[in-house]
Image 1 (cartoon, helix red, strand yellow):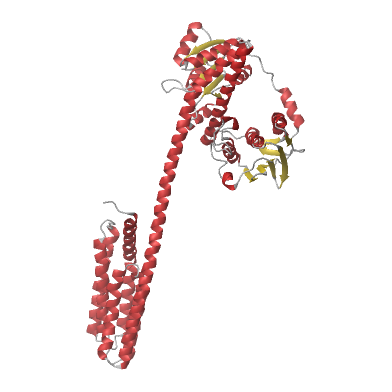
Image 2 (image 1 turned 60 degrees about the vertical axis):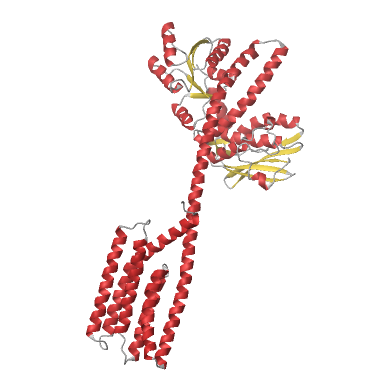
Length: 581
């Protein structure tokens, strides 16, 4: 029959009592031996030598036997079998009590009241000192203390005069008070042990729940990653084919249908991009390259994008008049501010949105303040949770996905920037982030010079592009769009197929585009490296993947190849190709 929690705690308390009591035996035996020797020396003038030798011998036997029990316990303690240790404690305590009871009889000088009183005080001091230790385990206490005190008390009452009756009464009161006091100590001790073990049980339960939550979270991440990859494949192919249609069809009605399809593809792409952002942040593969830059570099882009949206919603959007320089990662900081502005405009139906920058004590505080619906305290505690949205119980995708602020929190933690939000229901919200101020302002003129000195991009036309992907629909889609852009294309389902086709045509690819996950547990990284080695050239290469597994994201990052995540917008693919000389 399984033990209940209370039974388990009681067993643990019992084990702890036995362990502590056994641990204190060496000290108790040492005290017994020292006090016995001291009394023998002090009473040697009034007690016969035979009595002293008898008591010392008895005391030595008691110490020897208890020491043997202690050594046996110390080397072979078994918590599941406490009975021998309980018996050794109780019998050992009783043996010690009988020994001292015998000493109180043999060392009791009938004709000398001073020595009688001295003996009582010595026994009271010794029992009082050791009783605190014995209070841990009351059976040991009752086997030891009463045996000693009742022995000398009996002798006082046997004499029977007023003086000795008074000492006997004092001895009994002392025994009673000491017993009550130690019973209370014992109760408090067991209660403290019970609380300790309850806390340990709670810690174990919390640890188990934490591990279970981590397993569930890992399983969720693996599910999202697997589902994302499997869904991205057909979505990617769909995007490629609709792009071909968009560039070839001229009929207005059909073009309108294609635009509607593209809008749906864009919505799904946005969802996958958000999931990918979270996966990358959780996997720790987002590279942070902080540098000094002026905030106007970010806000020039944001103002062009959001001013028109604010104007369409009749919202007054104000921007800072002064932009200080900060030390951060521009792209990641822009992602945070973009989320702030999107939310501010989304939840403000009329009124104003105000963006401000203030430098103070080495930090730049960037705030986005709106006059929207606001939030209560309960909502504020949930806004950084994944998929949580304010006023969107129906999960209308046009109101967003509920991932923006979750990404903001992870990104801010990665940048080591503090974020803060304050809000009042019906009056609006203020989102802020504290960014380290740059030590010196940047010379924007230098930046312009650097841009002018960069090499011009070369339009890549009529180049041979090798596509490696085990999905036929994606190979066809990529081939169609690249052919439309005037590229030569070879498509292969794996490395072996690619090598056969290249050798048969006697060609060397100008560009390699490979899916990351190929058949038979091979990867695009392996394929690209093999092609580089075969042709003894660093052929420009692009990895395309829909994977969000943390280990795979880490592997992709280590490869140092350029990567685009499915579904890849055709314009990003074209930008990559045009960047190749």
